[in-house]
Length: 75
Image (cartoon, rainbow, N blue to C red; front, side, top):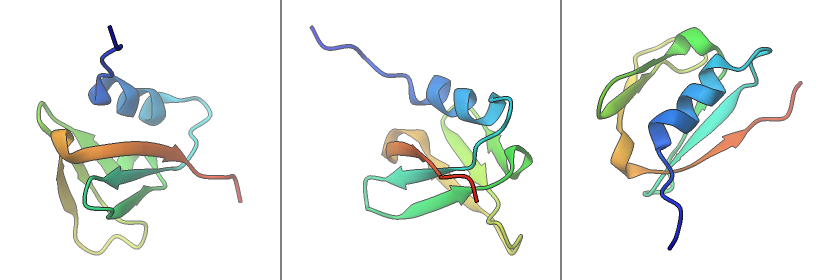
């Protein structure tokens, strides 16, 4: 039996990491969203709101449409 991954738990691991490591949310569509600050993401029951690094606007991403999370290399 395959292990079920809880994407919410995985996102919280990234957001709560100390020290914080920027990461990318990859959607099933292939779209990518960078989270460069832990305060730039708000996690809800079924969605995450992400404010882009330049702070213009925001994106609401459905958790069931997230394909993967990728850590970014430190600058």
